[in-house]
Image 1 (spheres, rainbow, N blue to C red):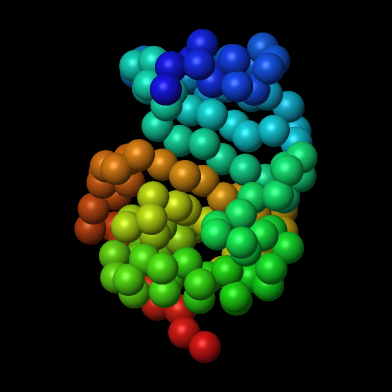
Image 2 (cartoon, one colour; image 1 turned 60 degrees about the vertical axis):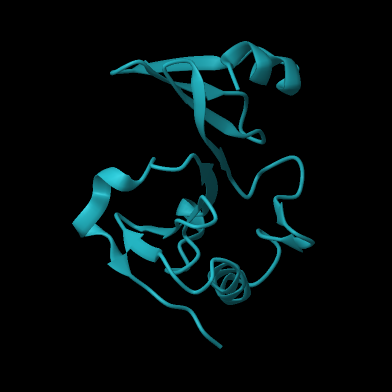
Length: 134
């Protein structure tokens, strides 16, 4: 998706913060997603617990469910493979989802992001495999 397409869906003009190379963060407000573009293509969308709408995976509200349940459910849906911890994030590569603040119970850092394939590849060997089970 392009920036104009996202602005049309969001129905409002964002504050845009540019960062090299060819990247931009679109901020639509504290209760709205943060959208990141690289070379005018959407590469990531992030949600906070203040989101104006529920953030769901299937029927599960990810911010209202217990942190443990969310981690276990996403790990199961990822095929119990290619799930890593890096830089304070839990990265579910098969799902294209990251979580922060869930595994360490840090409410101030809690966020959920969805990303395009390859976005986390630059972390390579710094990614440490992690598992979640009941």
